[in-house]
Image (cartoon, rainbow, N blue to C red; front, side, top):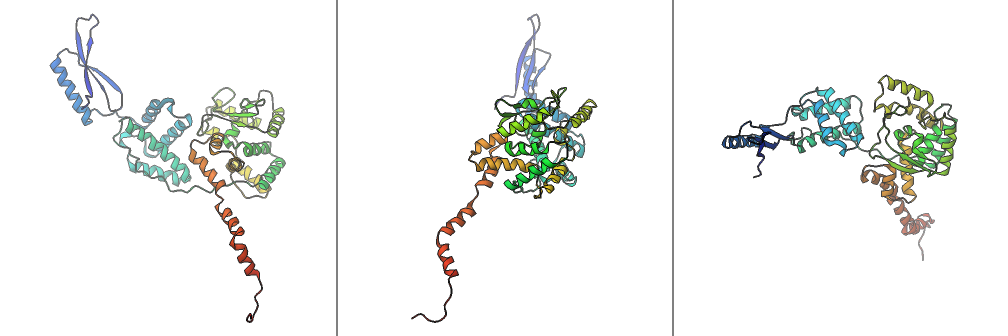
Length: 397
């Protein structure tokens, strides 16, 4: 059996004497070196054996930590091994768990606490997909604690996510896109809706990616957009990309012309592409007052965004869909025009192949159409002629 605790010798400064010390890893994975303050070998071996037994029995367990301390400890241990967006989601989920059950010791958390948390946020109106995301974040944090031997088992291991089925992928038809752009151009709002919609349709960018786009991200010479996270500076606020760290997207000649025309209407050195100047000033004041958070960079950039977008759709006389469905339209168009799944995955910024494959199936699943064509070309044509043929009475001699 592997020895968990070892005896070491620490010499004195003059090198004439020494004391024994214990060297071991505690259940939190931290290295401990404990001085025994004597040089009695027999006594030191006895102390080593006792510490070994206690360690194996779990007597020397992890130190108590409140949940608020536990999340910071976990993120510090993980370091840069996970994306900033993932760390943000984990910290947010833990903050919400603390609001639900209190800032208790992490070793006291039970399955019942998880069930209470899950139901609270369902009752609060969160979608099942959103609650599922929160549950996954918490389960991962406690799973890491088990791996680090801070816990014997994950209290949320058996916490089931709320049942939910992914909605069918919605896209805009070509005629709908044309009417949508026309209605957006006629909109009297100072917000550049037409350009925003057009960019979403040709680049597949998410709403947050578009609204946090700065002019420095656009390479007019290379005809590309570089999507990258933003740091908190005097001119820009912090913003993180979902799933990926950064990616490049191509721009059409028409898009380049529209962007250049839009930039010419803005003040010199104005950083953001789509944020109206007055709204930018208001956000800067909120930042100065400490009232702007990372979450706000996703949710509060443009007030009433959904309502205003729905208004444009109604004017265009099309079925109300989400702004995100413009991105869906771009991705399905990439597939329809021959791009591979790997290429689409990179362009769309998906974190895993499974997400991209869903769009591929939505485009490639033409089984019904192929079966209809096969039937039309085969026996059905003859059957149809018989069906349409007139029926004569009497016997045929």
